[in-house]
Length: 94
Image (cartoon, helix red, strand yellow):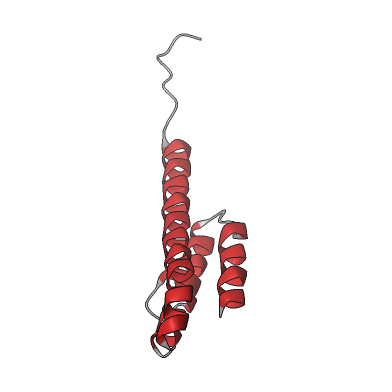
């Protein structure tokens, strides 16, 4: 499971979002209730206590990193959308 956590962390860090469809794909793949990370938490519940202590912190870090990346992507798309839809002020001096 440790290898799986590392693999998903690499995927999360290398995921690129250029448009809203990419954001939805990322969100559905990683952060929603039926996403990969929640499935890993379900598997985590069935582990013995000593493995839970070993894998709990990396799994929580993965979850937090995935959510942070989602927030970054959302903020980036919002900024891109607002700058694209903002008309130029023609009254400003050249």
